Length: 286
Image (cartoon, rainbow, N blue to C red; front, top):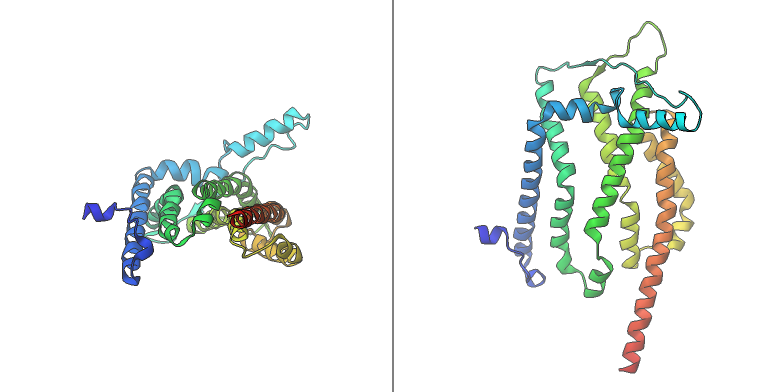
């Protein structure tokens, strides 16, 4: 059983359909186990993670607030960039609300921490189906996919989340209503922002490999630039609350990622054409 569990199975390309299903099952099992391991860590240290990480943007000691304040002082702007988080009162309205929050938070920590391993398992499953030339063009894929994912998470957590939460916590339309929030709603918003940006930051990597395989071209991306702007605006509206400032914070990096993706696609196409020309020259001389 252990031999089968850890087997690399080098003959995947010659496996039957049901063998592929069995192999996929073990990839999924190992990925789930990785999530469980990291989730256990999150479950044990629930209080520390909730108070210092999940609820971090509500604390005055949050790093983003200190960095912005120091930048304001450095450029002689005084306290104009210093942000004091709005006091937030959270409520739990379910009998099992806090224990369910603990399980959900632990799962989220487990998934985020295990993401590189999960993708590595996915890559091991699809790798045998690729040709040798495609494998050469996919070198470093695990690193870049993981890097972009965590880059999106850090961007969302340290930049988007503080502005979004402070805007929503301070937004009022009448003085007769006090802003008090369900703890579950706060966690849902944080998860939506952080994980959403983590996956959206995969755009350049996705474009690179689609270009390598000849599925898209920079000409295609340029021709649909206007459509992409509309889609990005919609995504920004979904990820963030109806606030122009927060939507611009989301829209700007996503649009830059789209423009960077055009450049990456052009480079991938050039590299692909050079390799094809080299192969043709070798075939002619041989």
